[in-house]
Length: 200
Ligand code: FE
Ligand code: ZN
Ligand code: FE
Image (cartoon, rainbow, N blue to C red; front, side):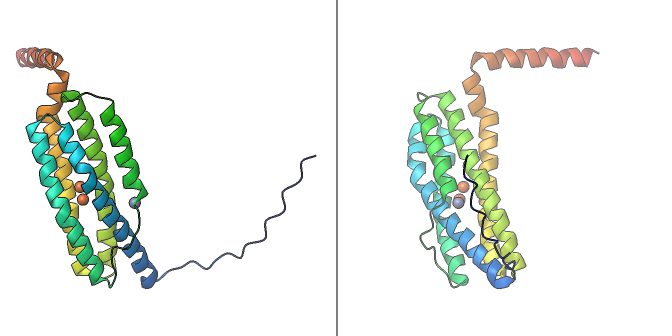
């Protein structure tokens, strides 16, 4: 007969930890995590730059990589305002996103389809950052750390703009290139549908 598992020692329910010191600690560790995320993303950019065959996508990546360098600086400054430093946290989430992007890059030859893959990967990355900075900016604000909140909001706005730019690029250039001739047929069909609608 299977032995019954030993009864777990009754765990005294820990008092919930609350208070501004605890929330501040949480904010600091999230900012340290974001710092790690940014530095990992910076290391990943060169491979993405090299992989794309689209000038406009390359430019978007280049410009956001430059922006990311200033984000790293701002995070360092913001951590300093909280009497802290970047520490040595390793962001597992960003590592996973980058690993997945690398795998997918290897599955495609350079060209429009790979550019779609690049945009998909980059937008996942941006959304991950947007989620983090949104939370952190609100926490900083609620802790009364207006200067820190402002720095985080600046970064948040840049991440949102980077994401929008990628959406626009996908919609206006990259997806159509990947769709190739199908897209032209689709456009013809769309036009025909529009004309039909007008006739009605
Ligand atoms: Fe960033
Ligand atoms: Zn993380
Ligand atoms: Fe970003």
